[in-house]
Amino acid sequence: QFHEAETTSCGGRVSGLSLWCPQDPMLEGVADSMAYVILRNETSTVDFDGAASDGAPGLSKAALVILVFEAFRSHPLGYIGFLIFLTMWTALALPVTPLEVCAGCVFGPVWGTLGSLTGKTLGCVCALLIGRMMGKSQGWKMPTALEKYLGLLKSRPFETMCAIRIAPIPLGVKNYGLSLVRYPNDKYPYRAYAWSCFLVGIPFSIAWGLTGHGASSLVDVVSKYA
Image 1 (cartoon, rainbow, N blue to C red):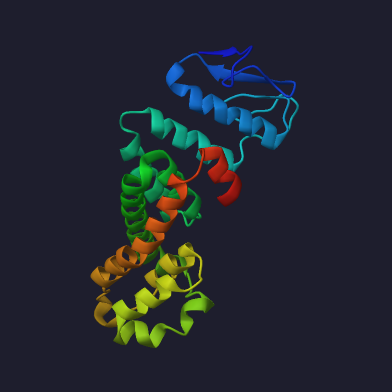
Image 2: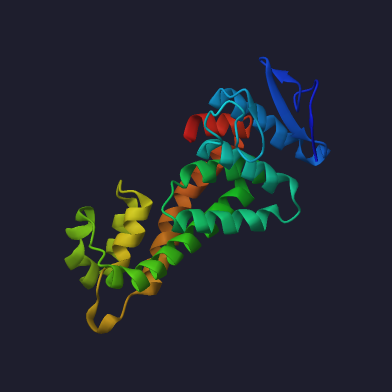
């Protein structure tokens, strides 16, 4: 149940705006984030469905990330939820850096880094499997950014995949582009792909986890990285 707040950071009037927040004290962080959502979207009244009374846009992607991570923070199984969420997010070719920074903020530098690395690697593997199953039937073509690597991918797959992982190419393009490489006798180097995802992801996950740990709040993280 929700009620119209009167005061406190969880509720009250935020610059003359009416904020609805949960009565459950465990979700105060979510309600704080709702104040950010309202101010960012400049709506008059916003509920948890993202509907605005004046017809203004609902929740942005950045606001959604905040609300989801506040839920992860407050729930006993939130860490598992984060792993599943990041896996799906990565497989959908969405930007993962904001989530990795948020993980450092919510779970700390160690567990945030480990969770980010695990979820991102699993998401990359899921993207590979999706691309392998659907790419040929749907007529997907190799991205131009990866065409120059085709020869090396077949002769030295692990080293080349690592080089591609480091290259400034969107993660979704890397994952689904690599899934379209056809090897002789259809023997795809799955192990090389998984290890390249994991090993190259280590320094990035550490860096973003430490960055998130040093942030003052999720709102601070999202305002800078989302």
